[in-house]
Length: 562
Ligand code: GLN
Image (cartoon, rainbow, N blue to C red; front, side, top):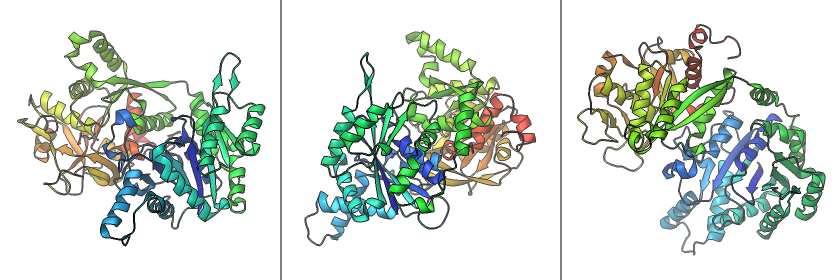
């Protein structure tokens, strides 16, 4: 196993995850098999309990792992299926060490950060790197490890030490360290400053790690004398100084790395030249260039709760992007804070309410993504009602599907207080209820998580056709509440059809509204399995409906560029 460790310095938010996944893409394009590990030095065991406001979306894996959103980047860039163990946190490591301690495995020894925690980290990395994630047998050739946070953070110390030990045990030729840093430009002279990078490299070296490569983030390309300076002061050969300057879209980054011969330098360091080919990045080149040249766009209203933080719905945004590109369109996403639509706001913030409604009415389609808690629910119900009544394409994901059921029950079936028991425990019409998958008595881990099968109830529905007439589909879940099976008949009689159900027939997975161009709800999250070049069928259908092309597409799905 060859390891590529990516660390970050100077500031957070440098795009370390995108850099690390792009390095993976270039190595994969050379014919190597690549896997990845993300280390998050925080104490949370996983990202499941973390607020999207603070930390961005919680990404969900096939095995039900609730992980950092960077794993989504790896899955999308490398087209792999990761496991929950590919995301290491301080919480997970301590938990495993403490379990061993309680079992008495340390035979009376004092259990310490060094060597026990560091040993556990090393073992975890070595064993997880061997899990195949690309559908083939046997371990990958290269494992890209991204260390979250910035070098020097107190909480990442044990990881740095463990990685130093790992390097020592596997040897320099099996371990390559790439340090991502920032080259800011200051003042009127506009000089590229290398000092912050020098400091963070010094910090790394003080901890026993010397970077073999620098990946310098900058607005403009690095000047020759900046490179020389960096090389001299950071002890990195000029040929190993990579530069990730600002580019029009992130798909350019693997291309940028290739143009700087990053692959040659990395492969030489790892002694892999003999098994690697010249990188083939045709698909990436086409996609990056196509996107730059797109002129038409489609307006999509995203009505959610966490709209203040761009990363809260990262995978939904990516899935929209994948679907739009397949239709030769740029997505123009209008974020609407669901609560702004609510009537209560007419008095307190009339302008915000008016703007929210104007934006909603201007959109070609409306998406209500997943969420928890009752804030904004009233606004989401209004958005769903508007989409239903005005025949605007609607995609409701997880909470968005539950919203469409509540809205339908209230406004079509006349059940005024219909609700989800998540929002109103005493509702006389619980159309959405708590349906634990395992224990009915235990509240912990009662979320229905990960890949579950949906069976289409009839081939004669929009979504089955979008999924290319398959009989079933496996998508990822993350929810506690579900459509009340006792209400299904009543809802169906009035035109809300549950065209996808789980294998027991008790869990409603997909709904469609009769006589509407596209009104679809999914209890699962189709966004997590969308890939560039392979958009999620539900997102594709949604965008096609927004531009009036769904009919022609369904007649001949293999036609044209789609
Ligand atoms: N809060 C809802 C539930 O738990 C929806 C969850 C979601 O949208 N991910 O079922």
